[in-house]
Length: 501
Image (cartoon, rainbow, N blue to C red; front, side):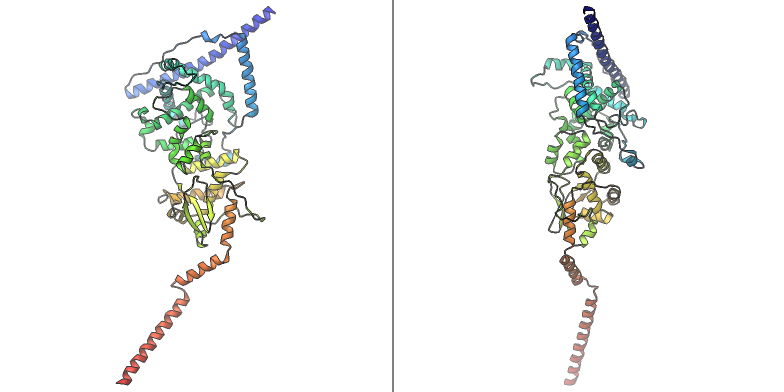
């Protein structure tokens, strides 16, 4: 028994050393990459390198046989529970959807997550990610007076960036299994590669959001902020379905890294500020929705766009219409349009012959945002496809640039004057390619269809058109009669005058 106990202790201590060695190897690899990148940046800008002091302590590595056995059991149970309860929510766009339309779903500037990891086309910003990581883990953090925080320990970590890396790597190692389960497709990366990818990409996003919100953190000649439209292109890449990492990874990293004193916002509030220019709807309502939980950044944007009204079901037994006519055709039928002051972009209403639609701002990311949300809803949601329903509704209304002009004049579309053909082309393709499984607007379709069927509406409009239409045959007859009467009157007046002479 003593020999077996000794053997067990020996095995546990050996396993413990191997685990710690793996974490140390990851940190060492990341540290060396950061130092190489830092030296390159310093040479480029004529500055000095930031050295990272290396301190190792193995005193905390030996916690005893019982403690290690408990940790192993807890880890096994945790992974088992995650296997049973986890839901995949990050997808690769299916080939049948992607084929011939790669630009809708492929990043142009930066890779986030495993789908486009190490893509040579996107390698330009890889060094920049490491620069941002170095800046983030080397920053002096703000004091945290909350219970459970030791300010002396926090300040000590600020003097040793490697300690911050150790904390981050440890946190990512603990959530690695759960994070992998968030991806629908298998991830062909080793544990070290996966953890390093999550660390570099996650810290890049956090540092970018911090610099966007706090101008004092920006460095001179940073191309992301110095190059026109660079931030806009990054936003477009951050909203792609294939370019996501789980939101809980970003939240846990945000807790682990040193946050600057100037920052008083949560991670979601920083993200809201970064995306606010492309978020439609009432700003306060959108901010409240954006600060709730979500799967990833794209899902946060989807959540803040959801309607505030419950879905209305058709009231007739006959199948409701599945679409509407174009805006210009509906106007000919007597239906009016107006811009609605609503809390959500999807709060479209029809009443008394008026279709009230909230303002949609056209921007450079709109096309990618809509297509990626449509695919996300198709792959992940079995119930009502809200964003898809809205995109299809707008696709029905907008068939040509005349429809764009009409909706723009009614302040339903903004930034449309120079983009009429682009907007018409976008929504035309959506109507052509998208099939809505369970539309949110079936009752609205029914209401519009019922309204245009009322005979008196068409009759009154026809009468009104005839009254004001100068080219009508009735007007020609009336004009001829007036001329004849005038001629006859003039004739008799002249005749009477002659007879009196």
